[in-house]
Length: 151
Image: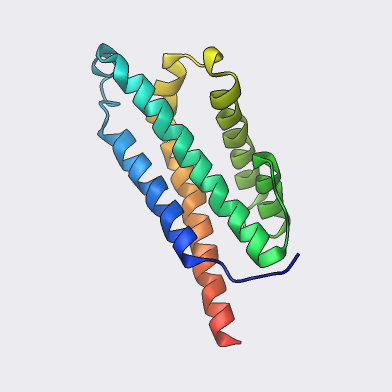
């Protein structure tokens, strides 16, 4: 596989999608469980925003692995493992991403098993985890850009 530069347009697009999804999730009434569940559309919207933010996060990770290391990663859990093996994320962060990958797969393939309570819990307690991984990937990309421009 031919190594290539990271495509800034793809990076910017995925970061924008993730940021927009997280901002929109935080605009939902997650600080008030009763209000959140009073409108059935909140759960459906939250599920979509969570899934889309995870997909964009994994797309960003895949892009890094493919372009900078020539590592094909078709499955989301492979992306987590690849980012760890290339020292982009720590083992704990890799485990966190692996859990995110599993959750995203459940949302797509076992959607009927995911409860509204579970969606609410993710909104309330786990959005910062998506931001954590995003910030690590952004920092790596920025550091990598500096290294490339010094060559």
